[in-house]
Length: 236
Image (cartoon, rainbow, N blue to C red; front, side):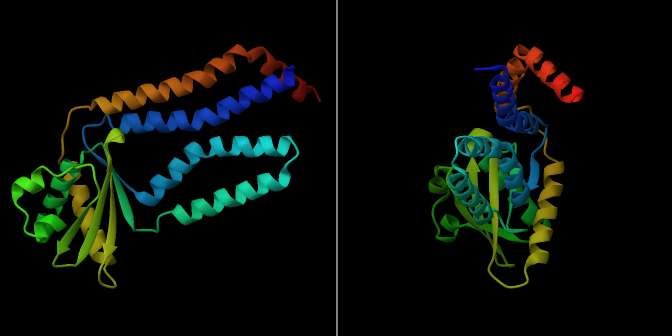
């Protein structure tokens, strides 16, 4: 591998792992706070895409480099179409970080009570006993019905990342004001929450620091090549 190839490889490693490392570092810091963090699902998906898109760009550039531009274009169009298809609609969902499923349900209960609303799971509506509901798996998706406004929330969790996604489905037209009131009430409840730093936060920070250390190590190991390349560019 000549000097030019080494420089390209180093830059590829930095560009591929750098955004992902920053994402895990930020996620770890969020999970180390004293209270949960509420973000829109659409914004969360865009940030996640930015963090991992270099891993997709790298093979596309490799296809172009080895003389397969049409295949690279096809892959690019496919990835773009998948992104558009998976991009959440505005106001369709929110992600609550640094929270467990049971804690999220408690915060939703408090937010609904603040508004004078009621909230029930499908199991509660079906009349299951409290013991059966208590022993249900909290990591699975659950559907919550909010009355009397007719909102339905699908609660889906990722315990490893300590986040819960709330997908809001309106059962009646023009229910945007009720959704906004619920999210505002939930945000107020979050401000009164106080917790100790979670082990998940420290683990995510460690993962992010490790991912960031790999490209930095490559960068410092080949700093002389990069300096020579920069000098060559500036002297042209």
